[in-house]
Image 1 (cartoon, rainbow, N blue to C red):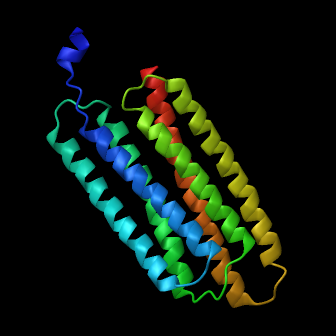
Image 2: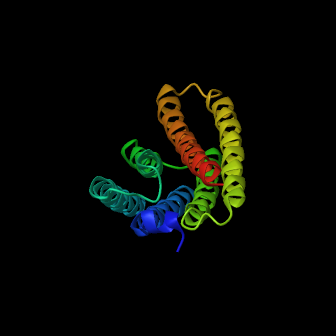
Length: 209
């Protein structure tokens, strides 16, 4: 056994918790796409997303508890804290989008919402694979490539948001503008949070390469 391995126990609990949290984020992304794509049974679908956000909160809390109890961690404590917080933020924005759609009593969704929701989904699928990669750190370059793809998707989300604005401001209905603008922005903000996660993972990959 190498001296490093003897001095630093390979504590797998953090990696397991991160993988669980990433899986919940992916499931929430599928739920928001389903909500936007098939805008029926809205209250039930929103409730499902809220439950996933609660589950994510529990896992995030577990991560922080482990961090407070563990003297030697497999990653830097700041990296663990940043990654947990950033993943949880994605869930928060997905949930906030869904609850706004319900409470604003949006009657129907539109292609801009669907495009943004799908970009969230594509992003978190990449992030889930990157999170799995940090357990062994066998291929840090692959982790970086997935993070680069998330950055590319976030740029597409910026473009999608601008296109949504262009269409939205052609209407004179102020209430519609306020409601839809807020929903577009929360969807796009979720992709920003995906980029935050990608940046944390990229930093981890670089430090361990």
